[in-house]
Structures are given as structure tokens and as C-alpha cells.
Length: 177
Image 1: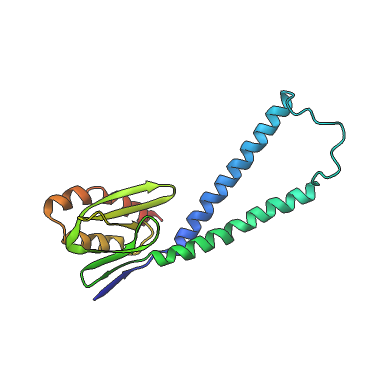
Image 2 (image 1 turned 45 degrees about the vertical axis):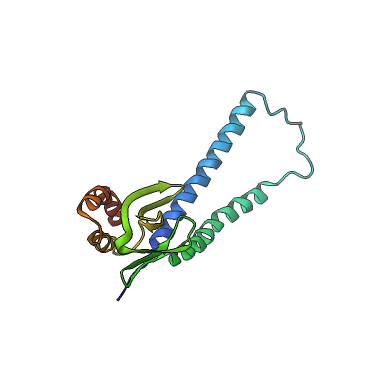
């Protein structure tokens, strides 16, 4: 019996677009503030005539438009790549990506702990085996509650109590998206 838990890639795409857009806007605003403050304080010392090879305002507008148009394209490619990070339970074996995206396998009976992981835009739950193998389950995985229930079935009561106590935060975040 195969249970496939795919990634909600469209939701992931929207979230990535939003985060990257705000990061670029924030960097642009910070750059303008730095240039403005430095010119007010007299650090710019620009010549009276602009150099011959200076960018015109229309060229700058095209560059900005290119960045803004590139955000959806880049994030779409990332979201499509993340689509392959689905988690599968096949013959009592959990199959999914490790931190680097490579597929790993953990027998359900070998899962010793589960904990949340938040780093560099990766929001996930990590299922760890006795041998140290880790599988990262994205918060954008469909049917997370069902998946956690199935993983919890194979854990001892003590492990389950420790591990599953942190999972409501992930489930809440997944429902909000």
C-alpha cells in the first residue's frame, strides 16, 4: 500500500513570491536611504556632469521591471523543483527528502523522534531514525495531519509524547496557508 503525500506547490510558489518580493523591495528601499543619507552628508562628491556611460532613467526602469518580472519565473521554477519533495509511505517505509533534497528511506519502526526545523526558509518537521537518517517533511505537504498520525502509530508512547507535542504549530501554519 502506497500513501503519497504531495507538496502543495502552488501555495509554496505564492509564499516564495511574496517573501522574495518583500526582500527585494526592502533592499531597494535600504539602498535608496543609504544613497540619500550619504549625499545629504556630502559623501557622494559627484562631478557636476554625469559620466557619458551613466544609465538613463528609462534603462534603470527596465532593469527594475526585469527584476520584478523575474521573481515569478524564478519562484515558479523553485516551486516546481520542490514538487518532487513529496513524502511516501510504502510497505511501512517512510520515503522522503533529506536536508539536501536527496531521497532517503526510514522504516517506520526505526523512527525515534520528530521535531520542527526552521532555517533559511525551510519550515519542516524532521523525522529521525535510530541510525541518524533524517527526512524533512515540508509544511506544504498535503494531508500533514494524516501523515503525522501514521508516523506516530509506530513510535513508543514516550517518543510520541515528546515528538508530537511540537507538531500542532506546524499543523496550524499549514491550515493558515
